Length: 177
Image (cartoon, helix red, strand yellow):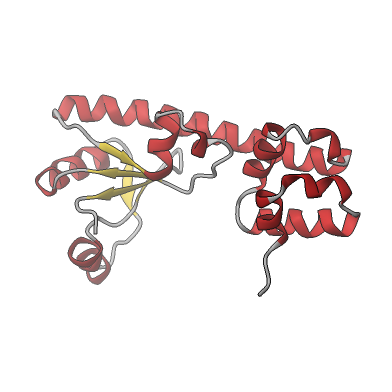
């Protein structure tokens, strides 16, 4: 059975001390493909192995770390905006997955890449929130009636919404399977 180099590094971090340029190249490609370059930078630093990383490789993964740190700042700012809107509507949203980790300052958030913000509302709150979000510059990414019905009936969420200026994507769930 084949085990990726990325998994091997996570399981036994000290192996990077003997890496060749070929190993580093493969590790970077695997981490990039898994959207884990920033997580890898955090992990290597947390293990005290930064000195084992070649300078060019370190620059590469650290630049990704900076991008993800900026993304975390954007997510936190977006949550502030959402919370202001939800307060006006007297709604308590539950943040899910990566956003929940980030807001709780859990180690799982370190180096985590975000593609969207996931929240959970009651089904009764969906219509009110959806209208309010549209008034705040959010639009559905799915406009086809079939797609709308599929998401709402089978995915237990409304179709993803994206802010027209900031580009942030919001997934609003009304049930967790």
